[in-house]
Image 1: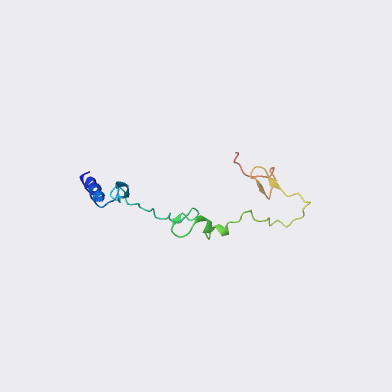
Image 2: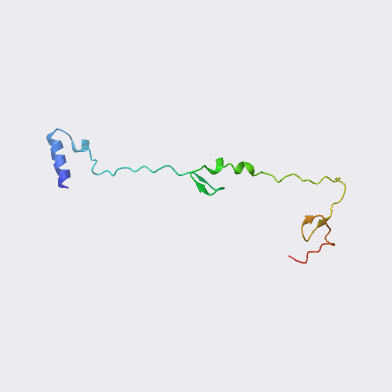
Length: 99
């Protein structure tokens, strides 16, 4: 407080008003935050790239691949309700597990 009072007295002698004083001793130096680090959620790595720019993201298709079945559309394909796969009927399923 004594330092502050001395500065105010010196300012008054120099013709400055107390509001014109440079009160830098009251101010804390502003610490700038560093920019956020790049992080990729897909690769789970820092500083290489952002998730939007991930090279692995381009390899993941938005839709499932097209079917490779080349039979006729009118033909009924065997489907197993138990296994949930094409290739055999439910009646001829050898899977003993029940869900």
